[in-house]
Amino acid sequence: MKEVILLFNFEQSKGRKLATQLMMMKFKVKAVKEEEWGYPIGYLCGSLETIEEKEITEEKQKLDSPMLVMAGVDGKRLNQVLTAIKKSGIGKIPYKAVVTETNQHWLPFALLEELKQEHEQMENATEEKAGGFLHKEQPE
Image 1 (cartoon, rainbow, N blue to C red):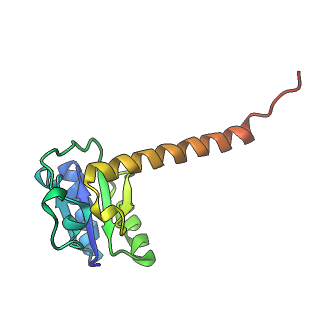
Image 2: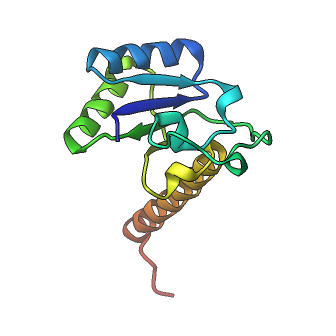
């Protein structure tokens, strides 16, 4: 799979800052336009060269948060992406994903919804864990 970073729904100035940092590290970056949100992730990153008609949908769901999707990025290069995010000064990007055999067939909206659910589960687990350490039950 070719190495490419997809940027979805970034404010123009933030997207430009991030893309600049990523390109300095020799990443291919694609800012995915809203009219392309009806195509599968794999098609957008080039891992699916052809798509079936049923995979294209006009029912593009709006993406309400920025999302960064990495294709063909290994461990060392993943750390470089995270460094580029920090160096860009755009703040945190809570919704990041790596393209897999499964999610390459998903539409961007479906991937974002999955990331939101995972993010919420992780936050809840962190809160529960912290709650266990911070709040000791008092004997009655």
